[in-house]
Picture 1 (cartoon, rainbow, N blue to C red):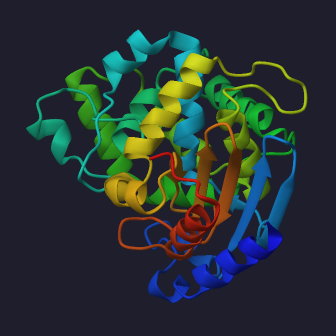
Picture 2: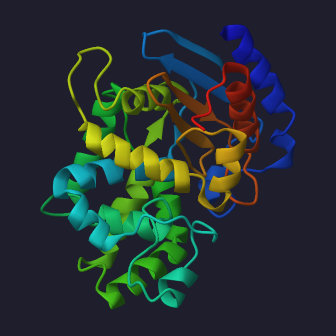
Length: 305
């Protein structure tokens, strides 16, 4: 397995020069675009990693998977999907156009920014402080890493430059999708995106979803099986923004990317994968990371299709 991972890493390195670190969040521009790492954890408890798999990075949109899961556990699917749809989009992750043109008065899915902000509004808590505390605690629980926290520098950078996300939130407020105070809500969203993890953390989370929400170490059902099924289905159709269809063909596993360079992937009943490669393509996905996953999917026959 380590040999295959090393080959995947070398393959991915050929493509990092085609991307660049996220430019619209100033703090992320400081990250070396040549970083690349991958880590795998199987349901048998075996684990393998190569490259920069122990380097911390902010998970950004990968947080949408955890927040959707927690919102479903807090509210049930009926209430969640009253606020946000389940359909894929052909538009960029931060697009506002479908909110108005589709006349849905709700975002198309929880994996685009508008949908994620709406989902965050459903997290239980008396205020934003309690909401983000619950999100961070849930991230620690599903990753098995009690040290996970928020990168304050990245959070502040996003808060200072995140006017597009504010506009999405205010538009949804005007439509009645969001009822909460927008500024308080948007700061919870910025903070969840600024949570820091490693490839090892992502692989552990991926293995949990692969195992139908059952912790590999304790055998405890952390997430209900029905919710892991819903979330992984949405990851499959919507997890890589407007490149989700191409990713399904090339890699064929449920996954979620983030503009910090991470990709969380889960292969049902087999393993979890964590990827880090901050060089992004024009759609916000890791250039080297996708190539590594494509190589690995072919070599290990991971595609669910």
